[in-house]
Image 1: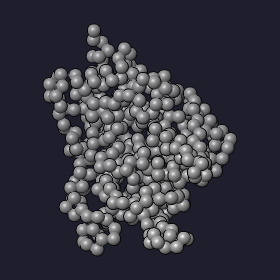
Image 2: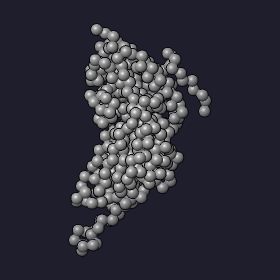
Image 3: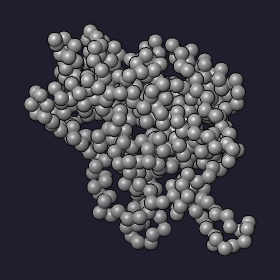
Image 4: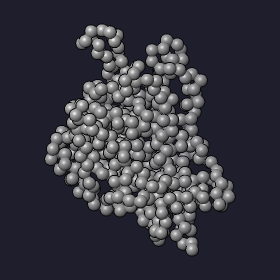
Length: 429
């Protein structure tokens, strides 16, 4: 692989051709006139890669219902759908016997797994609500269903990562737990967690580990087997495949033992007649991914995720990482140099981050800053509490913050326009 020169020099532009990302050359009207739109909201939903749009366009004329169809288009679409599982499994280096279940999104995938975990779950208070609330609900109906006697045990993060890992270790050893559910990268600050070390901590305590990779998968290579991850979840819409599909990858025993996530066609092996005698009226459910994919699945969403996995692999995580590191460094240095701008961090020590930065601007609400950037400069960012209310309170900003996030369609001029706009905001009367 050739070495790519990516530096934070003033002339740096996106290393990926603008045609690689759908809508990268979109223009909008703002106070400055019609300008190219700066998409600083990749962490919420990334635009589609051109390769993904091309794959979907090719699949649409041949689209048909999957499984059990004898027709040519049904067989062709089924092959594409099932091949998507293989592509996704290969993308995250899953074990050969892992299940790859397609869901609606990351939230859906975690809710699915929450019904299969046979014991307590330990989480940190830095998590997105998608990795907090399902665990709180998993033991809500213990009277009617004693088997759901499971608790969510929340550990408060400490000032340093080392102290936080020690607190997690203590909690996992204090009382038995079935699962440690942890983010791979914070959706607020972009700080990356040490997955292999966390897996070791969980396994040493007799627990398994779930990694919420919604913010990590688009930026870094993940090795399920190599990192020791038991379950991995992520969303297509953050992986440059915005077609409403997510993924749960992981060990099959808990999933096969759990009640089907949805009751319906496709999840069943046999449904007896309702007038059969007691004891012979049990539905026979399938095992494997089909057990939790009742109904017609989001076929095009699965195809899109697989296409994104292939396209990202072709681009190369080394190339993506170099590009992102240069732009993230440029962004952080620019934010830190502006009076009144405070950049947020979970831990005091300098941590590896993906292309996300959250900040506040003294004297301005997060919504006012976001509206100003859009209305005056054609720059789109996120504001609020990012579905991570406990973390924002922990960071001392219960009212929220502004978040800018970057991706393969981001260039140095985008970062420079954001920095110039913030300087203007903080220095004007």
